[in-house]
Picture 1 (cartoon, rainbow, N blue to C red):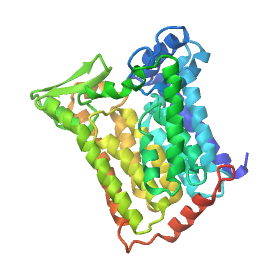
Picture 2: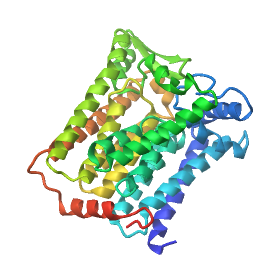
Picture 3: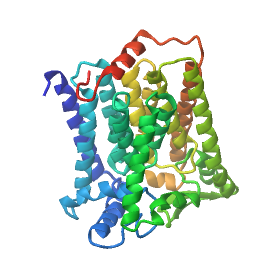
Picture 4: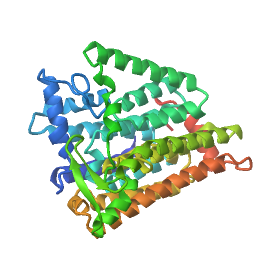
Length: 417
């Protein structure tokens, strides 16, 4: 190992041992989805039973089942340990790509920030399927300018596990000159997934993850649920309940159905606005690598902030765009990096240890999640403002941004700098 990287790998090991310990010992059962939901799904598939997404409708895209199977090698009782090992190995691969040969200060800063975020977010950081897609997205974004088709395939596979990496694909198609290769990589990957799924009997369930979302109500962690949490906390006509069909907690109260119905169109409008701002920035001949990190972060944050669905693990979606942004321009991404750490800490305050307090709409828990959700909206506003500024003709990149962007564009995956 390169001696200059030794401290960073020591940090990685210590942080992941800490995450292991928290996930396995914390109250609130942060690995509940892994052992109660993922384990039966994977055992059922491997034992010749019904395959979710193939023989029956499923809330996840079809490839989400793939990472649920390898931890079975550890046995039924140690499935959770196997899951954590798998996630740690994937993180290590992405971490190695990020650090490269250790000469880039921006990459090392990004690596330290990533480890800090794992600490502040807590055990949920590896407790859901989202954790598998994060290192994939990091690697894809780091190589996308040099290997656009490979990056597109990685992001497409990740999207067929959890939909959020589609934001990175869309952003790349919008601003990169290699958009055709990115589009082709995504189309080819999707065709392979669909043909394979249909061949083993996936029709009509292969796209059931889309239809399964249409009837969902407003989840308690979604920013739009905050008014109902306050009403319930103050003894008003609102309540929190568990939906056994989709296995999640939602809010019930006056106007919930209408609000739930309009949230998807509102999200589409916000995404369209972000796309227009990115197009405007391109017209000023702003470098694509200046626009791309902000655009990916904007789209990902919109998927969190303007959504009727909300879960603590959604915070891990911020990791890949912020790591990428810190590599390209640590100066520009200082504010979102710090704000994301605060959002992660606020999330850990109510999940998993005292999640019951939130379910009872206790005042302190409602205040905590309100602050977290306001912070998410602030992050979205920052992204929109930055895209607007990037579209202003007078904006010129700093020396640091120019150097980092040039280095990122010129560095192949096999020779990181």
